[in-house]
Amino acid sequence: MIKEMQVVGITIDPGTQSPIVILRDLENRNILPIWIGILEANAIAVGLEKVKLPRPMTHDLFKNVMEQLGVSLKKIEITDIKDNTYYAVLHLETGGKTLTIDSRPSDALAIAIRLGAPILVHESVIEKAVRVEAEGGQDKDKWAELLEKMDPEDFSKYKM
Image (cartoon, rainbow, N blue to C red; front, side, top):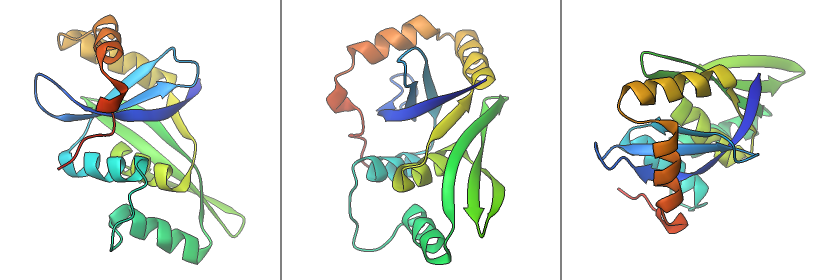
């Protein structure tokens, strides 16, 4: 089964000081934290905040090239997690043809945000991620508690 999710923000892991992009399903039942790099966090934050930069960043360039070539992004999917590494694909359409392109989730999210494409996550990823977090000393309830305590102003305020 696949769930549609949305990026609700970016926060910092209090233990590791690493950026985390937070996805939540549309029914507010599942939260999926994905640890990402600082540059990826910045790219996602710029997209979330709709910041207009004087020159295009990589994901803006990708969007511009797609638009100029008549390629549309139908959706992104986060398809798997193996050894704490997430996997994603872009579903592109051009000239009546559908293409599936391998991507890092952080890049897929940054592009989807810019193009307004749906973000889909396989339910197995959510289940595996919760188990991985539980084994790492975190559990779903602890994450839910942490996120509930955070001020919404904290989300998407991550700057380099």
